[in-house]
Length: 310
Image (cartoon, rainbow, N blue to C red; front, side, top):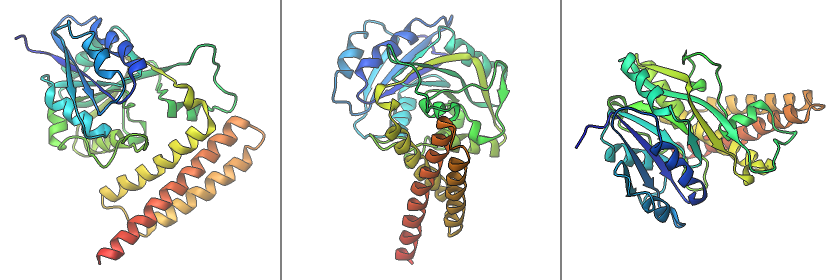
């Protein structure tokens, strides 16, 4: 059997309406060497398996069922099943450009210190839908939009890390880190995150490099339910919880989290008032402030847990 040079991995949970297009965009990649596509069905109850089975005539496609719900769990399962040294993750509701794998693969071939790479992400809006007037560029990032320009950038700030929907790693680095942390990353409808940010922190601390590759382009579908203000508030709440958990996992969880969260909450509310005349920026700052409540809630729970153990 030929050696695969890169493994494309799709982790999916109940997204059968988008999944077929994601798989098809990988099977038609303009990549001259051998590659594979691994679909990790993370406990789906819809037609996910049927969507994959309809394409299993292509020998490059593999299907695996992972019953334990959680994006980080599914990603680790995909890495175990995949055979290549370079692992490229595409979301189940995204579509890769035809040169996506080639651009990613070439970057790793050119730089032995490259641990993580991802590319530009544009948004695909539902038919007959325009972006709402209250959607700021910052909040568009919550929908997956990611654009650091048209030139390659080596990431120095973890907050600028590539988006998980268009994301790749070197297997040796992932194994060095022990895989994705299952305490971070989406679990069902709980929008935990920050697993990519944590990986970038680890990479930079250990002398690896992280790159933004604008030509590794992916388009991300915006689901209709994500065009509601309530979705952004919920997303920000879980972002706050994720940030708190990430700090606690890094042994930075202490009483000072209450001060940090409180200061950011006040700052967010102040800016929401400052930009009151601008509906997009006003909502952006309010969403940020709302996320700090989630952060503070998780911080209090963490302190209570420590006190109970002591």
